[in-house]
Image (cartoon, rainbow, N blue to C red; front, side):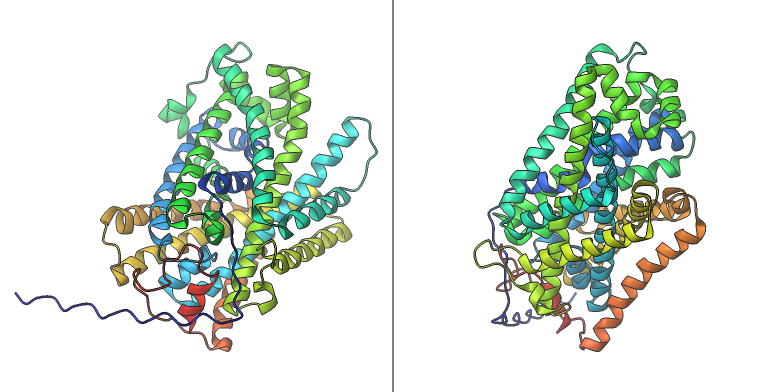
Length: 504
């Protein structure tokens, strides 16, 4: 048997352009977890998604659906984290796809991500405006257009996004602790007392109940609730020790989100009993969580829940603002967007230009929604949240495929579980979730097949636009540097470095 031929030495990385900017920070795993869990908006999910899952999904067993989706996403996270040390910079999904599948799919994923996160942020603006208006009127205030409240939130998010990331981290941490605290108090009271006299639910442990109703719709609603956890890699340049911080933050965020959703949805079911919870969710899904907390914790608890629902939405808004700003920053550095977007602030080391541009885009969308008279919940929120769900699932599936291809080609990591089996299982699970979402997409956005087709067309068009753009810029897939190559695994490497190296 002849000896295997040695692998060729990796090429030296391209020199860093003098005009490239970088982000800086000392975020630990806890700070990043705060930001991505805030993006998932835990209280908003419990208030909005759980009733829908109970009513239209698999009934009282819906809490177990969160466990199933968390397992699928943990499998995705194994490969995602294994590859994170080989993809420095703040490009997240698109940098992974570019490194594994080539420049054209990578830039296509970048444009798809921009549309996806812009959509989810627009959804939050609509829901936030409507929620604040309802809260103000409930306490005797005037009835004002929802978009005025949305515009005020935009200004605050823009100011925080302009400054150093650690300020946003502190704000998000405070808001997240408050919204999670009231739900955990509610959970503890229900667990201790058995709710309103119906006893603790066991439906989630009964396979026949878990498989009853519409499991596909239940999975669709549950997987949508995790949107935001995958943004950990976006903050790589601002992490204290990215090789350790990013994987820890990703796993911790997933486990905490999954456990919180499962426990809290179980408490909501237990508070009313299996049949009572489904009936309540069917009758009045929008007010179910506030009514439940009021019944268990009293009027003060209900009023506090209403206020914290507003702060939960703002926390999600701010988190997605930061994610979008860093996508634009990375694309500016990579030369795929105007270079001005890739500038970092001299004092705050923040993507201030990208943050301002992102605020402008959000303001334009709010203006369009206002002028066209769209309802902030049934249209803005429903349509945009549905768009984001479909887009994120497509992005995660592409990323899983990129992980598999990257490790198979580069052989820089030969751990079978981390680089092959777990990513393959994650890809299979994500494709099933994507198929279920496509099949039930009209339900997710309000029942219009024509609108579903139009939204799908926008997402496809965004991806195609990115792939076509590489032809005009002369980009082409490059080589795969070794993890030992200089500059490949630096904690504070420049955002967008990998995509630009891939496309030279």
